[in-house]
Amino acid sequence: MAKDSKLILDPLTDNNPITIQVLGICSALAITAELEASIVMSISVLFVMGIGNVVISLMRNIIPSKIRIIAQLIVVATLVIIVDQVLKAYAYELSKTLGAFVGLIITNCIIMGRFEAFALGNGPWRSFLDGIGNALGYAIILIIVGFFRELLGSGTLLGIEILGDPVAKTGLYAYGYENNGFMLLSPMALIVVGIIIWVQRSRNKALIED
Amino acid sequence: MSLKNKLHNIKEKYKGKKMAPAFNALHTFLYLPNETTHNGTHVKAADDLKRTMNTVIMALVPCLIFGIFNAGYQHYLATGAIEASHGFLGGTFWTFDNLIHGAWKVLPLVIVSYGVGLAVEFLFAVIKGHEVEEGYLVTGMLVPLIVPIDIPLWMLAVAVIFGVVIGKEVFGGTGMNILNPALTIRAFLFFAYPTWMSGDKVWVSEAVERAGTADAISGETILGAYAQNNTLPGIDQWDMFWGLIPGSIGETSKFLIIIGALFLIFTKIGSWRIMLSTVIGALVMGLIFNGVVSAEIIGESSKFYGLMNVPFWQHLIIGSVLFGAVYMATDPVTAAQTNKGKWIYGFLIGFISIMIRVFNPAYPEGVFLAILLMNVFAPTIDHYVVQGNVKKRMKRLKVKTA
Image (cartoon, rainbow over all chains, first blue to last red; front, side, top):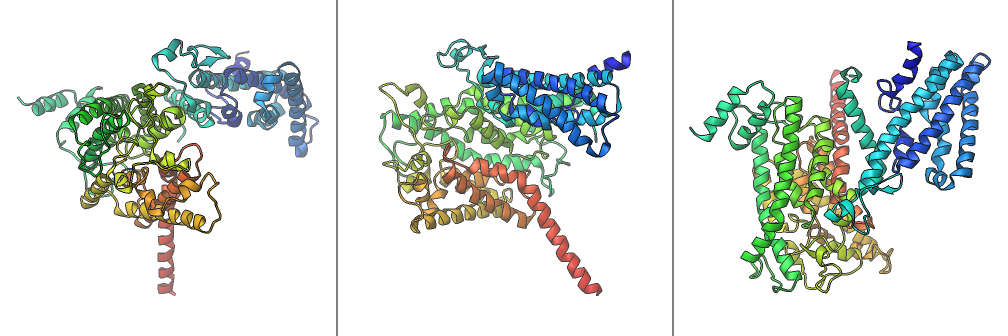
């Protein structure tokens, strides 16, 4: 069973889909200005990847390899539409914030990558673990980036004012602190991801490629 | 025993130890080291990096001193304490009061810029175990000169940390950076705290505190006024040339910038090709816009009219085109390296600067954005210049052999 736990733990650290494989960057840059959006996005991807990997794994012996991409797309698209409808029904405001990016989960490279690289060649249980592991690895980075961007960019976390009220000048703002507007722009998300990559590779030199 | 000997002894004692780069940096900063720079992509001649840096700093000092006086002058002028002075030697400009007020505002910016920047450099030198490079000496001097007078010190400190780490250290330190670190710092400030970097309240000292009170003063820059189709009363072209206008601390006096430019060209530190081609680029774009206005493609109702209608040569004496051309565009690390490349690089900087200046609705200045953009393209320009040269020679070779 040691090998199975590796399927979950590896993508969290040394084989992280975002920081090591550099996949799924687009959504990581686009929707991480708020922590809440990052968490919802993470849960959506977790759902799609967990189930999608199992479905593909179950069908792996009956999909002709010539049309496997289309088959995979149909599976992802179905799952994404379910997520999209659920979000619209129960969290309408949030689904408006996420906008097209829920739909764009379909083209998230991590999902297609895991279908191709893992689910097509492994059993349902191991595929499930792999899907969950990679989605968690994605989630961890999204949440770290979302945490810093919302805290430094808006002074809030999950909408709660942590650093005080910027208009009434309470808390830190009374001392002249101001929100960093750059944090709310996408380039800063790229820089934050870059810093995470930098820190991770300087702690584990084996990850540095020439 | 003199300080120099003491430092030398410390240097010998700590050789190979962890803190050695920090001591060496102090030693190098104060005295001539016994070795010259021997790496970094920007070293194309036998010059020592330290000589280059010191020359640029000497060219910047007049701008700094003028900036200090101007900070006080603009403050007292806006509060109505003194009369407007005309000409470079105007009676109410070079006064002791102006010096005190200006120094009180500007020197903390210089100290924060150098203190924070060198601390980051020391930290990286100790972690990575390389020698502290002199690269920050010029950046640290440029930074206070290109920010508004009232920028809060902690913002400057945050921006300097960001600029030095992300703009320079991640690429491998001095000589390896793609973007000009001083402009990276300015760009960070502009995007992070736009209310402190633009508008009509930040260019004259203490205007922010007075906003909304009976003593409110307006310190609009010339560009800000033109962008709103206004003109500033009481300021003529000579004031712009001598520099008695609100603006970033060091950029206002075109006269001293030109003297600095001549000094840099004379000592062969700055590239005259880049400076000249930037000016030409700016003039060409200005002429195009003047042409658009006189062809009546754009009328007075257009929001671009104010800036497009500025006579083309006046673009040089308003805003920071000259400062950017002389001190920023010529940065030997981030500029194009080939002679032909320098012409293209400079021309595009001037051209794009004026274009952004006219078309950017949020912020009527584009020089720093244009230079950063061309920093990114400089290696590409060099690549094509070199390839073009190779092709030409290959052709010559074929003709001979055939």
